[in-house]
Length: 338
Figure 1 (cartoon, rainbow, N blue to C red):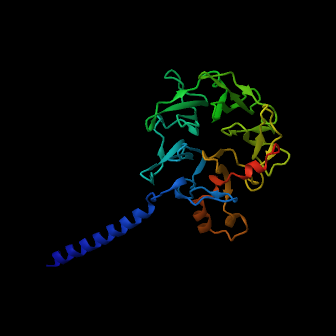
Figure 2: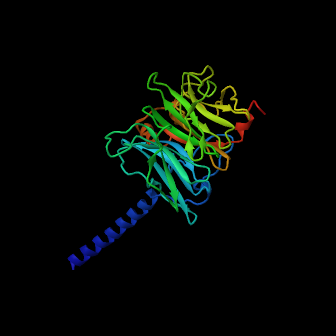
Figure 3: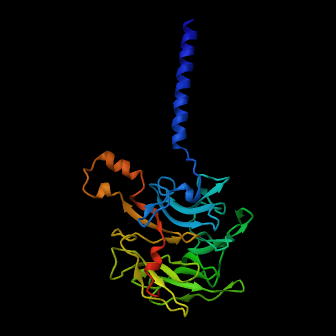
Protein backbone atom coordinates (compact mmCIF):
# COMPACT_ATOMS: atom_id res chain seq x y z
CA UNK A 1 0.00 0.00 0.00
CA UNK A 2 2.89 2.41 0.80
CA UNK A 3 4.34 1.67 -2.63
CA UNK A 4 1.02 2.46 -4.30
CA UNK A 5 0.70 5.72 -2.38
CA UNK A 6 4.30 6.63 -3.17
CA UNK A 7 3.75 5.83 -6.86
CA UNK A 8 0.59 7.97 -6.87
CA UNK A 9 2.46 10.87 -5.28
CA UNK A 10 5.20 10.57 -7.92
CA UNK A 11 2.60 10.64 -10.71
CA UNK A 12 1.01 13.77 -9.25
CA UNK A 13 4.41 15.47 -8.95
CA UNK A 14 5.31 14.48 -12.51
CA UNK A 15 2.02 15.80 -13.89
CA UNK A 16 2.50 19.06 -12.01
CA UNK A 17 6.09 19.35 -13.24
CA UNK A 18 5.31 18.74 -16.90
CA UNK A 19 2.29 21.01 -16.67
CA UNK A 20 4.53 23.81 -15.42
CA UNK A 21 7.16 22.93 -18.05
CA UNK A 22 4.64 23.13 -20.86
CA UNK A 23 3.43 26.51 -19.68
CA UNK A 24 6.99 27.77 -19.48
CA UNK A 25 7.85 26.32 -22.87
CA UNK A 26 4.89 28.07 -24.51
CA UNK A 27 6.12 31.36 -23.13
CA UNK A 28 9.56 31.04 -24.70
CA UNK A 29 8.27 29.71 -28.03
CA UNK A 30 7.79 31.95 -31.06
CA UNK A 31 4.64 34.06 -30.58
CA UNK A 32 1.60 33.91 -32.86
CA UNK A 33 1.81 36.97 -35.09
CA UNK A 34 -0.76 38.11 -37.63
CA UNK A 35 -1.11 41.09 -39.93
CA UNK A 36 1.29 43.30 -41.92
CA UNK A 37 4.83 43.78 -40.67
CA UNK A 38 4.63 40.90 -38.21
CA UNK A 39 1.53 42.44 -36.67
CA UNK A 40 3.55 45.31 -35.21
CA UNK A 41 1.95 48.68 -34.40
CA UNK A 42 3.15 51.05 -37.15
CA UNK A 43 5.40 53.89 -36.01
CA UNK A 44 4.72 57.60 -36.46
CA UNK A 45 7.36 60.31 -36.87
CA UNK A 46 9.35 58.96 -33.90
CA UNK A 47 11.55 55.94 -34.73
CA UNK A 48 10.69 52.71 -32.92
CA UNK A 49 12.42 49.37 -32.58
CA UNK A 50 11.07 47.03 -35.22
CA UNK A 51 9.56 43.89 -33.71
CA UNK A 52 11.41 44.03 -30.37
CA UNK A 53 12.54 40.62 -29.08
CA UNK A 54 11.33 39.07 -32.35
CA UNK A 55 13.54 40.68 -35.01
CA UNK A 56 15.36 43.27 -32.91
CA UNK A 57 16.78 41.18 -30.08
CA UNK A 58 19.93 41.26 -27.99
CA UNK A 59 21.82 39.88 -31.01
CA UNK A 60 23.57 42.05 -33.59
CA UNK A 61 20.80 42.58 -36.17
CA UNK A 62 20.71 44.67 -39.34
CA UNK A 63 19.56 44.84 -42.99
CA UNK A 64 15.97 44.57 -44.18
CA UNK A 65 14.35 43.32 -47.36
CA UNK A 66 10.63 42.70 -47.89
CA UNK A 67 8.89 40.93 -50.76
CA UNK A 68 6.60 43.24 -52.81
CA UNK A 69 3.46 41.59 -51.41
CA UNK A 70 4.73 42.05 -47.83
CA UNK A 71 4.47 38.35 -47.00
CA UNK A 72 8.18 37.65 -46.55
CA UNK A 73 10.58 39.65 -44.40
CA UNK A 74 14.33 39.16 -44.56
CA UNK A 75 16.90 40.42 -42.04
CA UNK A 76 20.41 39.56 -40.91
CA UNK A 77 21.92 38.33 -37.65
CA UNK A 78 25.55 38.12 -36.53
CA UNK A 79 25.99 35.81 -33.55
CA UNK A 80 28.38 33.09 -32.38
CA UNK A 81 30.57 33.59 -35.44
CA UNK A 82 27.71 33.28 -37.95
CA UNK A 83 26.58 36.05 -40.33
CA UNK A 84 23.31 34.92 -41.87
CA UNK A 85 20.15 36.05 -43.64
CA UNK A 86 16.94 34.96 -41.91
CA UNK A 87 13.42 34.94 -43.31
CA UNK A 88 9.97 34.91 -41.76
CA UNK A 89 6.90 34.26 -43.93
CA UNK A 90 3.21 34.97 -43.52
CA UNK A 91 1.43 31.70 -44.30
CA UNK A 92 -2.36 31.55 -43.98
CA UNK A 93 -2.16 34.86 -42.16
CA UNK A 94 0.34 33.68 -39.53
CA UNK A 95 4.04 34.55 -39.45
CA UNK A 96 6.55 31.72 -39.20
CA UNK A 97 9.50 31.62 -36.85
CA UNK A 98 12.54 33.13 -38.64
CA UNK A 99 14.84 30.59 -40.27
CA UNK A 100 18.03 30.81 -42.35
CA UNK A 101 17.29 31.31 -46.04
CA UNK A 102 17.13 28.23 -48.22
CA UNK A 103 20.06 29.17 -50.51
CA UNK A 104 22.67 29.00 -47.75
CA UNK A 105 24.76 25.95 -48.61
CA UNK A 106 27.64 26.42 -46.15
CA UNK A 107 27.13 28.20 -42.84
CA UNK A 108 30.82 29.04 -42.42
CA UNK A 109 30.50 31.84 -44.99
CA UNK A 110 28.81 35.23 -44.78
CA UNK A 111 25.31 35.70 -46.21
CA UNK A 112 24.31 39.31 -45.69
CA UNK A 113 22.66 42.45 -47.08
CA UNK A 114 19.64 41.05 -48.99
CA UNK A 115 18.01 43.18 -51.68
CA UNK A 116 14.85 42.11 -53.51
CA UNK A 117 14.10 43.31 -57.03
CA UNK A 118 10.99 45.42 -57.64
CA UNK A 119 9.12 42.48 -59.20
CA UNK A 120 10.23 40.03 -56.50
CA UNK A 121 11.87 37.73 -59.03
CA UNK A 122 15.45 38.12 -57.78
CA UNK A 123 17.21 38.51 -54.46
CA UNK A 124 20.73 39.95 -54.40
CA UNK A 125 23.04 39.56 -51.41
CA UNK A 126 26.61 39.75 -50.17
CA UNK A 127 28.65 36.62 -49.59
CA UNK A 128 32.29 35.67 -49.23
CA UNK A 129 31.70 32.08 -50.31
CA UNK A 130 34.06 30.74 -53.01
CA UNK A 131 32.98 31.25 -56.62
CA UNK A 132 33.88 27.67 -57.52
CA UNK A 133 34.97 24.38 -56.01
CA UNK A 134 38.53 25.24 -57.00
CA UNK A 135 38.67 28.12 -54.51
CA UNK A 136 39.17 27.56 -50.81
CA UNK A 137 38.33 31.12 -49.77
CA UNK A 138 36.13 33.67 -51.49
CA UNK A 139 36.19 37.43 -51.79
CA UNK A 140 33.26 39.63 -50.72
CA UNK A 141 31.05 39.61 -53.82
CA UNK A 142 27.47 40.19 -54.85
CA UNK A 143 25.42 37.08 -55.53
CA UNK A 144 21.88 36.55 -56.78
CA UNK A 145 19.12 33.94 -56.59
CA UNK A 146 16.03 33.65 -58.81
CA UNK A 147 12.47 33.12 -57.64
CA UNK A 148 11.12 29.69 -58.57
CA UNK A 149 7.52 29.19 -57.47
CA UNK A 150 7.62 29.93 -53.73
CA UNK A 151 11.34 29.40 -53.21
CA UNK A 152 14.75 30.52 -54.41
CA UNK A 153 17.21 28.94 -56.84
CA UNK A 154 20.81 28.10 -56.05
CA UNK A 155 22.98 31.19 -55.76
CA UNK A 156 25.24 32.44 -58.54
CA UNK A 157 27.97 35.05 -58.45
CA UNK A 158 27.20 38.13 -60.56
CA UNK A 159 30.72 38.02 -61.98
CA UNK A 160 32.37 40.76 -64.03
CA UNK A 161 32.01 43.64 -64.48
CA UNK A 162 30.30 43.87 -61.05
CA UNK A 163 32.54 41.55 -59.05
CA UNK A 164 36.30 42.11 -59.14
CA UNK A 165 39.34 41.36 -57.00
CA UNK A 166 38.09 44.19 -54.77
CA UNK A 167 35.26 43.68 -52.28
CA UNK A 168 31.75 44.50 -53.57
CA UNK A 169 28.77 44.62 -51.24
CA UNK A 170 25.37 46.09 -50.30
CA UNK A 171 23.41 45.73 -53.56
CA UNK A 172 20.42 48.02 -54.16
CA UNK A 173 18.33 48.02 -57.34
CA UNK A 174 15.90 50.38 -59.10
CA UNK A 175 12.66 49.49 -60.85
CA UNK A 176 14.57 49.57 -64.14
CA UNK A 177 17.13 47.10 -62.83
CA UNK A 178 20.04 49.49 -62.36
CA UNK A 179 22.30 48.07 -59.68
CA UNK A 180 23.89 50.34 -57.08
CA UNK A 181 26.57 48.84 -54.85
CA UNK A 182 29.62 49.65 -52.74
CA UNK A 183 33.14 48.71 -53.79
CA UNK A 184 36.19 48.77 -51.57
CA UNK A 185 39.28 50.16 -53.29
CA UNK A 186 42.20 47.92 -52.39
CA UNK A 187 44.66 50.75 -53.07
CA UNK A 188 43.36 53.38 -50.63
CA UNK A 189 41.23 51.08 -48.44
CA UNK A 190 38.14 53.28 -48.84
CA UNK A 191 34.64 52.46 -50.07
CA UNK A 192 32.94 54.04 -53.07
CA UNK A 193 29.40 53.89 -54.43
CA UNK A 194 29.02 52.59 -57.99
CA UNK A 195 26.10 51.94 -60.31
CA UNK A 196 25.68 49.65 -63.29
CA UNK A 197 22.89 49.98 -65.86
CA UNK A 198 21.13 46.80 -67.01
CA UNK A 199 20.90 46.70 -70.81
CA UNK A 200 19.28 43.67 -72.48
CA UNK A 201 19.87 41.65 -69.34
CA UNK A 202 23.57 42.50 -69.18
CA UNK A 203 25.16 44.72 -66.53
CA UNK A 204 27.27 47.48 -68.02
CA UNK A 205 30.66 48.69 -66.82
CA UNK A 206 30.09 50.19 -63.36
CA UNK A 207 30.29 53.96 -62.97
CA UNK A 208 31.79 55.48 -59.83
CA UNK A 209 29.44 58.24 -58.72
CA UNK A 210 30.50 61.80 -57.99
CA UNK A 211 31.54 63.39 -54.72
CA UNK A 212 28.01 64.40 -53.73
CA UNK A 213 27.21 60.70 -53.42
CA UNK A 214 30.70 59.55 -52.49
CA UNK A 215 30.81 62.16 -49.76
CA UNK A 216 32.87 62.43 -46.57
CA UNK A 217 36.08 60.57 -45.88
CA UNK A 218 34.42 57.18 -46.33
CA UNK A 219 30.96 55.85 -47.12
CA UNK A 220 29.08 52.57 -46.96
CA UNK A 221 26.00 50.62 -48.04
CA UNK A 222 23.96 53.09 -50.09
CA UNK A 223 20.24 52.49 -50.67
CA UNK A 224 18.76 53.74 -53.97
CA UNK A 225 15.05 54.54 -54.21
CA UNK A 226 13.11 52.43 -56.75
CA UNK A 227 12.53 55.47 -59.01
CA UNK A 228 16.18 56.55 -58.63
CA UNK A 229 15.11 59.97 -57.31
CA UNK A 230 17.29 59.78 -54.20
CA UNK A 231 20.00 57.76 -52.54
CA UNK A 232 20.66 57.28 -48.81
CA UNK A 233 24.37 57.10 -48.00
CA UNK A 234 25.88 56.23 -44.63
CA UNK A 235 28.91 58.54 -44.58
CA UNK A 236 31.88 59.13 -42.30
CA UNK A 237 33.84 62.36 -41.83
CA UNK A 238 31.14 64.88 -42.67
CA UNK A 239 31.32 68.38 -41.13
CA UNK A 240 27.76 68.26 -39.75
CA UNK A 241 27.90 64.74 -38.35
CA UNK A 242 26.29 63.83 -35.03
CA UNK A 243 29.16 61.44 -34.48
CA UNK A 244 30.84 58.73 -36.55
CA UNK A 245 28.80 57.38 -39.46
CA UNK A 246 25.50 59.19 -40.17
CA UNK A 247 22.78 58.66 -42.75
CA UNK A 248 22.80 61.28 -45.52
CA UNK A 249 20.34 61.67 -48.37
CA UNK A 250 21.20 62.93 -51.85
CA UNK A 251 18.48 63.79 -54.36
CA UNK A 252 18.74 63.25 -58.13
CA UNK A 253 17.04 65.34 -60.82
CA UNK A 254 15.88 64.34 -64.32
CA UNK A 255 19.25 65.32 -65.78
CA UNK A 256 21.12 62.94 -63.48
CA UNK A 257 22.46 65.72 -61.27
CA UNK A 258 22.85 64.93 -57.58
CA UNK A 259 22.16 67.45 -54.82
CA UNK A 260 24.49 68.19 -51.94
CA UNK A 261 24.28 65.48 -49.25
CA UNK A 262 21.80 66.29 -46.47
CA UNK A 263 22.10 64.92 -42.96
CA UNK A 264 18.86 63.05 -42.17
CA UNK A 265 18.71 64.64 -38.73
CA UNK A 266 18.91 63.78 -35.05
CA UNK A 267 15.66 61.81 -35.29
CA UNK A 268 17.58 59.22 -37.33
CA UNK A 269 21.25 59.75 -36.46
CA UNK A 270 22.79 59.59 -33.01
CA UNK A 271 26.19 60.24 -31.42
CA UNK A 272 27.04 56.55 -31.21
CA UNK A 273 27.68 56.68 -34.94
CA UNK A 274 27.02 53.05 -35.90
CA UNK A 275 24.50 53.53 -38.69
CA UNK A 276 25.05 51.86 -42.02
CA UNK A 277 22.04 49.91 -43.27
CA UNK A 278 19.09 51.93 -44.73
CA UNK A 279 15.96 50.56 -46.43
CA UNK A 280 12.47 51.72 -47.44
CA UNK A 281 9.50 49.33 -47.45
CA UNK A 282 8.01 48.33 -50.83
CA UNK A 283 4.86 50.38 -50.14
CA UNK A 284 7.04 53.44 -49.48
CA UNK A 285 5.48 54.04 -46.07
CA UNK A 286 8.36 53.22 -43.73
CA UNK A 287 12.06 53.91 -43.46
CA UNK A 288 13.98 51.09 -41.80
CA UNK A 289 17.49 51.65 -40.54
CA UNK A 290 20.09 49.92 -38.43
CA UNK A 291 21.46 51.71 -35.37
CA UNK A 292 23.48 50.73 -32.31
CA UNK A 293 21.91 52.27 -29.26
CA UNK A 294 21.93 51.64 -25.53
CA UNK A 295 18.89 51.71 -23.28
CA UNK A 296 18.67 55.29 -21.91
CA UNK A 297 18.02 53.84 -18.46
CA UNK A 298 21.56 52.50 -18.43
CA UNK A 299 23.42 55.48 -19.89
CA UNK A 300 21.59 58.30 -18.15
CA UNK A 301 23.01 57.93 -14.67
CA UNK A 302 20.99 55.03 -13.31
CA UNK A 303 22.32 53.19 -10.29
CA UNK A 304 24.30 50.46 -12.02
CA UNK A 305 23.84 47.00 -10.59
CA UNK A 306 24.76 43.53 -11.74
CA UNK A 307 21.09 42.70 -12.35
CA UNK A 308 20.49 45.92 -14.33
CA UNK A 309 23.40 45.21 -16.66
CA UNK A 310 22.47 41.54 -17.07
CA UNK A 311 18.80 42.26 -17.77
CA UNK A 312 19.64 44.95 -20.33
CA UNK A 313 22.35 42.88 -22.00
CA UNK A 314 19.73 40.25 -22.81
CA UNK A 315 17.40 42.78 -24.45
CA UNK A 316 17.50 45.03 -27.52
CA UNK A 317 19.38 48.33 -27.18
CA UNK A 318 22.30 46.70 -25.41
CA UNK A 319 24.82 48.38 -27.74
CA UNK A 320 24.47 45.79 -30.51
CA UNK A 321 22.86 46.83 -33.77
CA UNK A 322 19.07 46.73 -33.98
CA UNK A 323 16.55 47.64 -36.67
CA UNK A 324 14.34 50.71 -36.26
CA UNK A 325 11.46 51.98 -38.39
CA UNK A 326 9.72 55.33 -38.82
CA UNK A 327 7.24 56.96 -41.18
CA UNK A 328 9.03 57.75 -44.45
CA UNK A 329 7.07 60.86 -45.41
CA UNK A 330 9.71 63.12 -43.83
CA UNK A 331 12.11 62.22 -46.64
CA UNK A 332 10.48 64.42 -49.26
CA UNK A 333 10.48 67.31 -46.80
CA UNK A 334 14.28 67.20 -47.03
CA UNK A 335 14.29 67.52 -50.82
CA UNK A 336 15.82 70.86 -51.95
CA UNK A 337 14.55 70.21 -55.48
CA UNK A 338 10.89 70.55 -54.47
